[in-house]
Image (cartoon, rainbow, N blue to C red):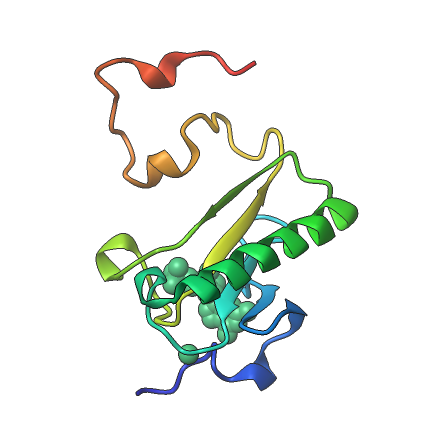
Length: 132
Ligand code: 5GP
Ligand code: ZN
């Protein structure tokens, strides 16, 4: 295995952890508070993690969310993982992105992660509903 930056724990500023998972802030945050939650064990992708690791990651995501609520009080979140280079993965140690969102941080947030492939219009016009 090539050296893995997410296995190099010394270089990460860990903000929360449990038995099987760790959380730290992203080095290049796309929004204030952008955090990553990873399994402690080196696995390449979401689909390589065990149910126990998924459970630990979900629980830790909740802990991180509570921390973010206290410190930054975001208006929403996007969470998700890139799986494989075609989907944009650049670090091959599974990580869940927790991206806090703030009202007005982009002009039109409708669709969120559905917009990873830009400029795809929905034939049923599902994206054209107004936000409440
Ligand atoms: P991916 O593109 O694989 O889904 O996301 C990799 C993420 O890891 C990126 O958001 C990137 O900013 C973050 N990242 C890359 N190297 C480091 C690092 O050394 N430390 C931290 N904290 N984040 C990193
Ligand atoms: Zn690793």
